[in-house]
Image (cartoon, rainbow, N blue to C red):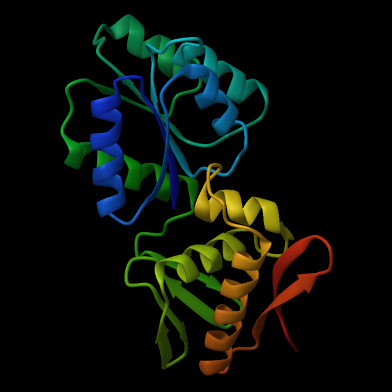
Length: 225
């Protein structure tokens, strides 16, 4: 699950990112509204943690722009403001949740999990299914019936991304942004390596589900007859 934290207080942003990473989330951080909006519009994030008071572009403007562009990613607003009017404005602008500073990190984690479940991308059992396979996103286990194999975090993230897109084609560039981030030096061959790893593990559990290559575009999960 990939998260975006948009927060101009550097120490707070880094502390939040550290905690989220320790809980097995992939995290990108933006320190101003302009870069935060650019990242958010990519559509690669599962949840956005967004401060209201930001330099360049404020959080409410970012939120309205996202909703206006049809980006439906769940957003948690972070702010030092606690007035009811501020909360109402944020929620009316398209926020899914609201957390006033200072906040408890366990509460933030719980709210992120709740938003993931509401969106349907994280099940209560932390399991995703496609065809004859099941992925446990918590234990990083791939299974088909009684057969099971462990995945690395990157393998699990790639499989989760493909499973959530179902029969849609995932371009290599989007996979790189999703798994490694915008600033990464990862290239197409990194994706090819992990696709190869996953194919071997799908074969190991004797699955009829396979990762098909759409030449010149990317990959998609398909179920063989």
